[in-house]
Amino acid sequence: MSNNYLGWNEYNLEMKAGKKALSGNYGRAARRRNPISDCPLTAALAAVGGKWKMIIVFWLAESPKHFAAIRRAMPGISQKVLTQQLRELMSDEIVQRQSNGPTPARVVYSLTDYGHSLLPLVENMRLWGRRHIERFNTRV
Image 1 (spheres, helix red, strand yellow):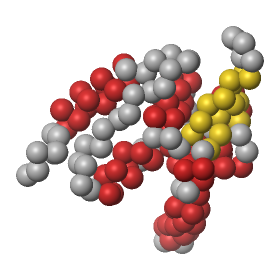
Image 2: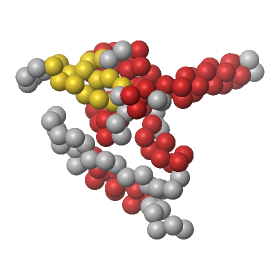
Image 3: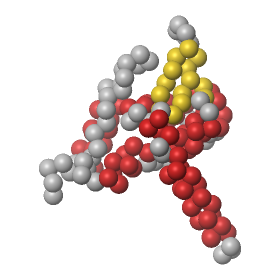
Image 4: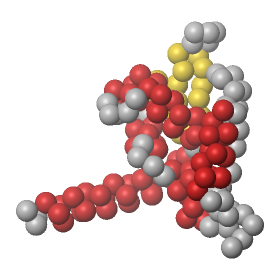
């Protein structure tokens, strides 16, 4: 095994530590470490894996959105989880947050140029998901 490999407990502790390092509304989130640095699939899954991140990218591809608009588009996500996922996407430079005016300001989230590079992947996953649903619906 490589020295870069982290076991699940160490990975979990590091992710929790990274979350605590976030610095409120004004600072930039701490960069999260890729648990297996030589593996491109692990790097991709660390950046956009999970239940919500690709869906967030999908909705932000349509247009920049306020936090409340993202929540309306994704009724199954809690405020806490959406905030966490947006912060992780910002730390990976996929999403940017723009504040419009003094506090309390309305905040707009949008994809960065780097985030736009994910759109072909999002569309391919969406199409594959549709075929996957149809495959199993025809068996019933």
